[in-house]
Structures are given as C-alpha cells and as structure tokens.
Amino acid sequence: MQTPVQEKPTAPATSGAAEPGHGGETKYDFMVVSNRLPVDRCAPGESGDDGSGWRRSPGGLVTALAPMMTKTDGAWVGWHGAPDETVKPFSHGGMDLVPVQLSTDDVELYYEGFSNATLWPLYHDVIAPPEFHRTWWDAYRKVNRRFADAVVRHADEGATVWVQDYQLQLVPRMLREARPDLRIGFFNHIPFPPPEIFAQLPWRQAIIDGLLGADLVGFQRTSDAGNFMRSARRFLGASVKQQQVHVKGHDGEVTHIARAQAFPISIDVRQISELAAKPEIVERARQIRQDLGNPKTILLGVDRLDYTKGIRHRLKAFEELLADGKLSVGDATLIQVASPSRERVEQYRLLREEVEGTVGHINGTYDTIENTAVRYLHHSYPVEEMVALYLAADVMLVTALRDGMNLVAKEYVTARTNNDGALVLSEFAGAADQLKQALLMNPHDIDGLKGAIMRAVEMQPREAGRRMRAMRKQILEHDVDHWSADFLHALNQKVVRDDS
Image (cartoon, rainbow, N blue to C red; front, side, top):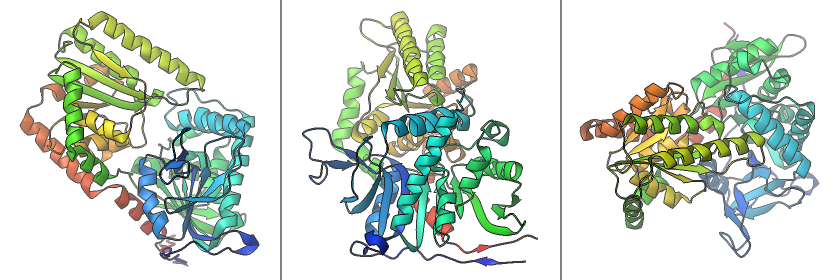
C-alpha cells in the first residue's frame, strides 16, 4: 500500500516583513528554532553590526541559515543569552528574531543540568558519567514547551519549522500536537548513542517520541541515524522501514511517518578561503612562526575545553614523543587553543585544572630558554586569527574521543590553499566519514596516535599534496550552503509510505 504524504512547498521569497496574523502576532512561513539566537549582545561601549547593540554570532549554523532568513519570510526563535530578562521580538541584519526568556533557574536546570550534564555525556558515549535528576527533566520539558509555544504563536499556516539540536528534542512532538499543519524538521548536531547506551536515560521514551514528531530527523553520520532508528524500534515499538519510522497510534494504525537521514554539516568555504588569501593574514601566520622561533614543525590543536575532545590524550602522546626523542623542543612546538566552555560545570573546572597542570609539567620538563614545548592558549579568537593559525601549522591534531562532526578539521583543510600540511583525525569524529585521506587514528591508542603524528611530521610533500587535494575537493563540493539546501530539499520531498 502506498499513501502519499502531502508536500509542503518551499517558503516563498518576500521583500518585506510578514503581516501580523491572529492575535496580533507576526506570522512566518519559515522558522528556525535553536537554544540561542544568532546574535550576541555587544560589550559596553560597542555599538554592534548596525548600532543596535547586537552583533551576529560566529559559527556554521548562523552562516548557513542567515542568508535564507533574509531571503524568505522567516524568523529565528531562541534565547538571547541573558537570564531573567525580557526582550521583545526585534530585527537584526535582515533577520526577524523571536527571543525566548529563560530564568536563572532555567539556565541551571535545563541548560547546565539536563542538556549539558545529562544528555551531553550520555550522547558522547558516557566519556563522563551522566547525571539523572527529575528536577532537571522537569525544567527541560517546561523550557521545551516555552520554545514550542513561541513557534505556535508565530508560525503561519503550513509553515516550515527547523528545530536545532539536543536541547530541544521535545519540541517536534509538541508542535505536531499543537499544529499538525506544520512541516517540521529536526537536526541533531551531536552524536546519537547506540540503544545500549541510550537505554540508561530514564526518559528515553519521551525523548524518542519527541523527535518522532518531526517529518525529518537529521544526523551527522549514517551510524547516528541508525542508532536513532534502533532506539525507536526498541523503546517505542515503532516500525522501521529503511529510513522511515512509522509512528503508530493507540489503535495500531500508522499516524505519522518520520524519516531519519544523515546530513553531514560543513563550513563557510568562501569565508575561510578568502581569509586564507589575505596578505595580512598570510603575514600574521609568518609572524606566529617567527614568534615561536621558526620551528621545523608546528602542531596545532583547536578545541573547546571539553572532555570529549581528547586534549589529554593529545598531550600525553606529544609528551611521550618528546621523551622518546622522536620530537625535540626547538624543532617541534604544539600550540593548543582551548577556548573556555561551561566553566560553571564542575567536570569542566576539573578538566581545565588537569590540562593546565599537564601543560605545566611538559613545559617544566622540556622547555629551553629559547623555546617552549606547548604554547597553551585558554582564549577564544576571532576567525581571522584562527585562519592565521591554520596557515602557520604544519600538522593539525583532531583527537576527539567522540564528536558529531568537528568543523575545525574542515576549516584547516580549507585554509590550506597550497595543498600542504597534514591532518591527524580521530575516527570517532564525524568528519572522518568525509575526510578519508586524513591520517585516521584511535585516540585511545596512544601508540597509534604517536605513530600518526610522526607520519604527519615526516610526510613527503607529494603525499601530503595528494591527500590535501582530495580532502579540499570534498569540502569545496559540500559546503554549509550545500548542507542546508540538502536538508530542506529532503524535508520538502513527498513521502511515500511503503509497508511492503
């Protein structure tokens, strides 16, 4: 039996704002929903992009979707970043923004608690133990309802709604129940765990049911989509046919079909390529090398300071290579950029202490008067400085223990416009599925990681060029615009039910 599911046309381009609809609320044909709005409040004394006191946030998601928001009758729903503050809907850079208010308790329980101390470690293979607290779950449900209500108020009849990431997994079902006319997409930016791990979550059925409210659930890797479908079958008894999950009502009849597919996210290739060609950034890269004493090899790690990134494993491998005499200070320097992350969460404070202690031990043991073994930078940097670092580095180290994608790997490859340099990449990062010419390794295998680093350091230019050209081709053909267009095209496709 084949039953066509109604197709929702792509949102039409408009030249002005949407008209106020029922109840005086402005209505939109296309809505993006994420934990944060795509803007940050400026520091005191700064005027922002347009004198408004706000500036556009960095990051791939904003880069991918902002042009679409300005071309369509669209709005972005999210928290504006300050607790206990009410902000009315406003426009910035051609985008209409609908703020959702969060209290200090909401931030502590829904965001720092359930999102980042329950779901984050659980979804990253329990690298750190997740905590399960009913008060956190109650706050998560309450805040997800607040986001859903904002969409319900502002979504036009038949609108397309694209919900983003693990903080809002209940929103699709809430929207499906309140507004069955909507076309609903969801994208999970982090990994989705296998059922054997997901089973630990006391609220596993509610999370799966929440996601199955969407028409299309997107993941970074095919394996993530497979894990989700296996969990839907195991914990909800859903019928899974290829990429379709048939959601059944109490009478056993199929009431809804959700599809689960992989859509690997990418980067703004044009921005990185243009920055890599700027004379002042090329000069800054030369200056970085000079400031480090012009070592033969610069190794680079760029991460949020997070236990999933494998920073400790990377430092251990580097320290052992120094101890073994395979690398020497003066010939090789490791730059480790570790941007601050979730500093109010205890596990992150402890990680920072451990990483900084390890760096101090390595430098105390191996530094010379002239040279430093590890240059550790606990800062966030603008994209211009990051591209200069990519150009300065001979070897990029991405040693994630688990990562949805890892866009740093793709940024490094894109910046290497001369097709030189080498990428050492964890097989547990989503980027490993696309960047197969990287030096892939298991970061838990310290000897294997050391071997991959030495292969990168000693790689001949011809082999390095061959590998880098192949990786650059893949990224140039699959940039962030390609990702968003692929997802929205699939979301708008007609679904044909096939129970054969």
